[in-house]
Structures are given as C-alpha cells and as structure tokens.
Length: 234
Image 1 (cartoon, rainbow, N blue to C red):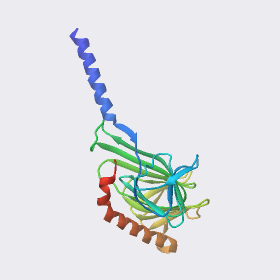
Image 2 (cartoon, rainbow, N blue to C red):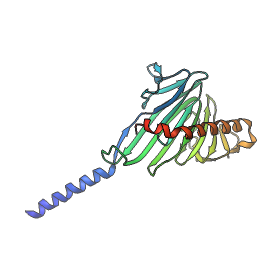
Image 3 (tube, rainbow, N blue to C red):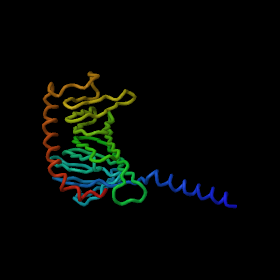
Image 4 (cartoon, rainbow, N blue to C red):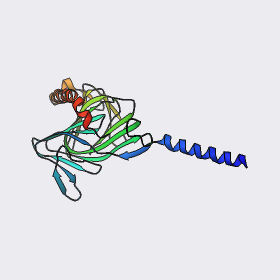
C-alpha cells in the first residue's frame, strides 16, 4: 500500500508546483500623477463622467477626456508613463500584471497595458526598470502601436489620420493585415501614407516640434519619477 500512497503524494506535490509556477494574473488601475485643467473620466457608454483627481481610480473600460488646454499625466503601468494632451480621448482597454503566487512584494513576471486613442495626442515614455516582461499597446482607428523596449514617442490621431513620431528607441506599428513597420528614433510615419517607410523628422517641421515637446516631457518625467515611485500601487 505504500506505493499508491507515494504516487498520490508525488502527483499532489507536482500539481502544487505547477500551480505556483503559472503565476497569478489580475487587473490593476492607472495612477494619476498630475492633472491640469478640465479632465474627466468614466463610462462613455453610459455617458457618466466625473472630474479626475490625483486619487481617481482609472480602471479597464474607463474613458478619459481632456478639454482644450488641459492635460493629464498617467502611470498606466510602472514601465509606461503617458501624457494625454488637450482635446483628446483615450479608453483603458486593459491594465494587467502577473505575479508569482500571492507575493505582495516583488515576484513580478509581466506587466501589460493596452489603450485606445480615439482622438487627440498622447506622449509615452516606456522604460523597463527591472527584468519583468512589459508591453504597451495603443490602438487607433488606423494603426496599432506596440512598445516592448525603452522608447519615447508621440501619437496624434483624428477621424482620418494617425501620425507617430519616435523620439528615442524604436516602436512597432501595424495597419490591418500589413507587416509591422519599425519606426526608429528621429523618424515618423503617418497613416494613410504614400510613403511605405518612415520619414526623417529633420525633413518635417511638425515632426521636429513633436520631438522637441516630447523630449521636454520625458526629461520632466525623469526628474519627477523618483518622487512618484511611492505612489504606484503595483
């Protein structure tokens, strides 16, 4: 009778080890780092919005809208800081983290954020500060943007076009069934476009402005980031 008992014990131990190795996935909330002017969030489907404060819990499914001259700085995940400029709208599609077991400190395996930019302008600083996997996606009407390594970029979209300017690092952008386009630092791409490859920002006045503005935002974030760390809930 010892052999069946031993076999059952081994199966139970193996099952526990496997369960722990998979990690636990859960949703999280964006952290509001700063807000300027009139910014609201809530459910677009129910037309139920309220003003954003530094303590506002912005979760999956929430829409954030900024009025003219307003802006909001968000930590979507620790690796992704975003500034939503005035007259813009984003929707939080998914904010998710995966941790080892029930650990409360450390043990982070994966962080991912996916948002929809319905209109307006967003500037993103993506930086992986640890060894955990992190990914960030932006969906617009024309294109999907993916960042998985350190980068700084800006996206501008309206009803007809989407424009992406990469300031540092590189990002990937795909439109429909077309292969992804790699946009490196100092280049931009617009959809729809007659140019199959990214264009040098040095040849475009608007792209040069985007780069200058994004660098100022990125440098300010780097100066303030240390003070923000203790406010991040994940």
